[in-house]
Length: 151
Image (tube, rainbow, N blue to C red; front, side):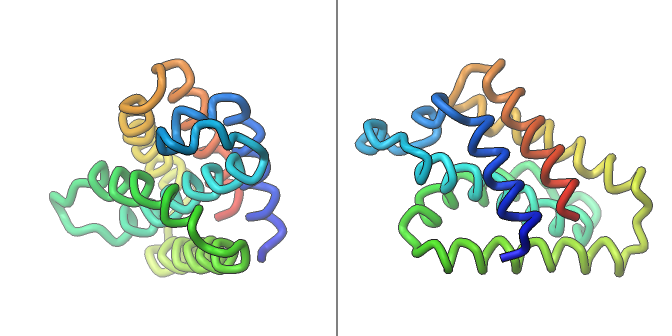
């Protein structure tokens, strides 16, 4: 796994911390150790990277919000059921695809920032369905800042 992805996932997991229970299935709220935080952090980073790649390649009128909600909403549970090596591979693939899309589109750092802001706003909406707004804003900002950092 790319070391930058590993560090990004750890940074997001650290930001999530004790708030991880908001993002885990009700029957798993008692399991809120670092492994759970890493799965949730990885799922959020994965959702960001997949959403980013989708946004770069989107057709006019396509709704990026539904893309992010679909990836993150399902990926926490999905990634949690996979072995760590599979989680790592999926993150690597998502990072590679997002980087390829940026390069193919010839995006400037300003354009990357604009896309990231769009994703962050949608992430806040998506996360707010599970957690208080202040937690959702804080975590979405962290995911966005470290997500852009791995692109």
